[in-house]
Image (tube, rainbow, N blue to C red; front, side, top):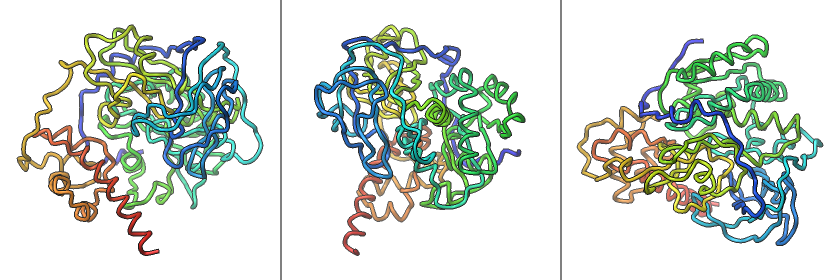
Length: 435
């Protein structure tokens, strides 16, 4: 298959060598440990609690049901007791309603989900969301409103520092492949493509061995950020352009992360709900690692498992440095979409002194969505949201390429994120007014 590529993108320092050779280690559960589970760990409506305070729960037991079609179930990550249903730390919302569980015993067994109903209903009961960071409820993607001819499995992992997907591709190869084939067969999709960036030659070699046997096409991708973005991946592999404001299904494609494919396989064959995931803990820690951790584990527990901080931490990011979220507390819990924790010291931080735009146009060249960030930034400063909407700011995928290349250190992507929220509210109010 030819590589079609996409316009824009950048080549940041990837810094993956810290953990790319580190096998996944399982973080043990200790009696007395507390797990903090926000009810919103996905795009869509928050889950609704089905447990009460002081109730005993088992690993994998349903503790909150989906709050609608675009929502996801939540399961207990441990055997223990519900100690409170109150506000907990959330990486985006600051604090929001959640469930706190205190572990009282260690047990590797879990409560299996029911095998009744359709494939999509089973995936919904398992609480599976996108594992690459977007956290879109997987059962929704598996219910396309129109015909789909291609399934893309995203193994790009283009974010700097992160290696959790890389290690999964090496250590759980068959789960990914069989999960992908399962989705293909259940949805009767014609083409299955597994795409991996060329900076993971060991993973490419491993998957190549099973290409003919399982009937998929392996596409080695050139190394460029944000290669793992849905629209960029579709352009690179299939030369299809997703229309503005539309989803990949509009061009006959469904995209899933490798971790999502493995989770679907486990849910279907083992009846295992999603209550744990692999997280890369790296940066200014004594011993960077890839850890398999229970959802709801506080960040501090992960850092301690890596030997603690090196020096004084200045900033911690959940996810990768390009698209991740800076967290405000070490009590912030691991979410279903948390692929990494990156710790920075003062000396690791770049000079973020902001200067006026010099009209160099680097942000325009770098934008993979063909936007004009330098012009849009002017509207952000003046809060001209109508003008921003006309300049298609809602198409921004918040990849951070514009901010990365800006010599004036303009906080471009941050302004676009905030503006998008205002514009979405405007559109909502406009719709209510016209109804």
